[in-house]
Amino acid sequence: MRLFLAFELPEEVKDELARISEELMNIIPRGIKWVEPENMHITLQFLGDVSSADVKILDEYFSSLLDTVTEFDIENPVIEAVPAKNPRVIWVHYESNNKRIFSLPGKIRSMADDLGYSLDKKPLKLHATLGRVKSPVELSQIAEMLSFKPAINEMTINRVTLYKSVLQPEGPVYTALGSYDLQRRNNG
Image (cartoon, rainbow, N blue to C red; front, side):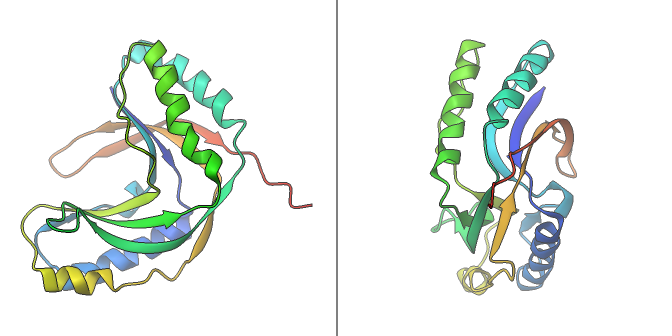
């Protein structure tokens, strides 16, 4: 089964991104397949095809690993078209001062190697995909789209979910297989 781990976005952020997507649809009515709001997330690590026999092992490992991670803030959202010259994806990119989260994919890849899986080695980019470009879009439309600024500038990420992804002609269907709450910050 096709799996990935994702940082969950708060519902109000999904609502805000859905509102932005609707406005962007007015600018670019054709050529982009927009992500459904319920499918918006920040991918922590794409796992690819995983044997169903290994899901329990992965779940236990993720539970142990993520139990040591404290919730963190992401901020400064910027809408980007990637790659810039011939965009294939429209996303909202975020920043975080929590450097520890950027080491998580390496730990996940190391454990996956032990199980015989070779995972994508791309560094973690904190982004939520808004849409995928399916046919050429005019640069003037892209420029207008990139000028949008999300209203929610900062949010707390406090949960990671293990998803199964089934690709359908209408778009992917995600099913949660595990959910991992991050430790609450000690603000005292």
